[in-house]
Length: 356
Ligand code: IPM
Ligand code: MN
Image (tube, rainbow, N blue to C red):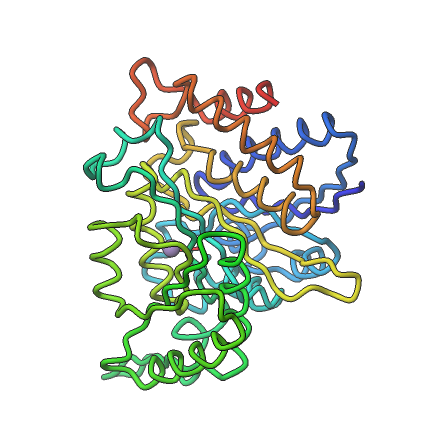
């Protein structure tokens, strides 16, 4: 099979973890006899520096011509005081919107090998296996009106019925192949948008009588995630809530560097689900350029790409198994607090490729 993929390394550690992930992509393609058609593009701070905009037309065109995109991370400290419309992050937000990848899947699990890497107690996190389904193209991130006046800054959190319905279907379909439980997270004790969200989720749930549905308020959900994370299977939530809660997921997994993500839209006429694949972590300017970032989130995102966009389940499993082997070997990056000398980003990438 020919895999047409756009690589967007982005900023900071994004370039480093992407290099390791592309290494693994080459290894898995070779092993299973697939061809890679890779193109590269600019996104984020590097794109602002080179072209004046975080989402150049060239990247837009390339993004529309591929089936899958592997993204590193965006964000640079020199843009910290720039308005949202001129920041590196804006490039990513426009890309998500252009691709209409409304469902962001963020699996969170604890690996036995990493149980000591989390600051939380072993008995609390042990056995955690949940997936956050974050709505990605609506809500507070995108709704109008938004702006900054002299004496007021404002954003809007709005959802249409269609927006809630489609991501709810994604969550329930996922639950079918898991432990058959969906937890919808909202703030319906305060927000009308959340009351509407809850109402639509309940309506959609009627089509999935085999799946258990519960509702949890977002503040309580944050607490429950560190108190008893094993209670969750599929967690469905709004864009901003999902952004915040998924960082807690990093603590459960041992490091935010472990977390992969898949951002998916609807299947096209050929039945292909175009996807944007990105680790959950950011550009981490504090450790950028030091070859010490954890590439497992990016490598896991490659596995997700093989599975969801290309339907290559065997290949995806092989990548995840290889990651498991490297984890078990203890040759991991500093964030995972290995016993011996920490491995570099490149070394972990190579180790995964070799384990394949
Ligand atoms: C994430 C990131 C992004 C987000 C930023 C970089 C725009 O934090 O993917 O979690 O807020 O969605
Ligand atoms: Mn985030």
